[in-house]
Length: 250
Ligand code: TYD
Image 1 (spheres, rainbow, N blue to C red):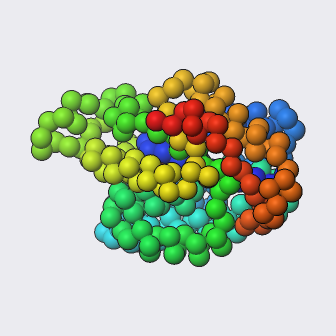
Image 2: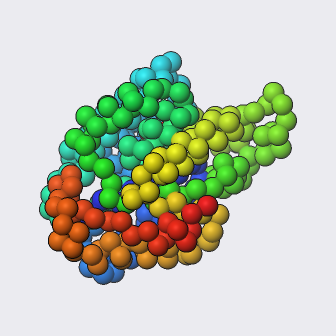
């Protein structure tokens, strides 16, 4: 059964760990699964990832977004769409929603523009389930760099966290940028509760993995015919299990 699941969240929210844990659980069941990571996975995505890891700046916020969108278009045409067509479960560590949160709510590009270009880049593919791993930015940023001098967050005029090792330029953005990204994700989740599951990312990884699994199992156990909507985006529809959302929304 084809199913498209994405993981979203701010820096250090634990998305990659959860995507990996879910992949392991699905493989144990013998389910066909492929994992992708944005930016990454394709040649273009890996090139963009390397660029970001070098902390190289973009003069234009639009250029930054268009690069993410280009890499996404490659990813969809090379891996996501063909995999879904074959009935494979696709796990995405970030997808279109990251651009809305980071380039839209974070950088201030018009959301409408991002939505339109995302739709072109993805051919309209939307995940069936999106897990938002939600936590305060200070918690996530601390996780990604133990050498962050957190006191800097609170002192006026020195809003940029400092770390010794090189992160992406996003990790080095001021705290209010990360707060805007977090609010952006939460707004998206509120607007489409049938797709989003908001999970408290400050919980232990094992607990989060169980919450995620509960929802995915329910989705897998529910044949498409039951809800009578027919295929959505070429994949099976009707993933509307709300239990985890209500139990764990933060
Ligand atoms: P990465 O190290 O992969 O971060 P993470 O492990 O948290 O995903 O770096 C990717 C960075 O790119 C991350 O800071 C979020 C950012 N990003 C955007 O700004 N827009 C996007 O559309 C995507 C996919 C990522």
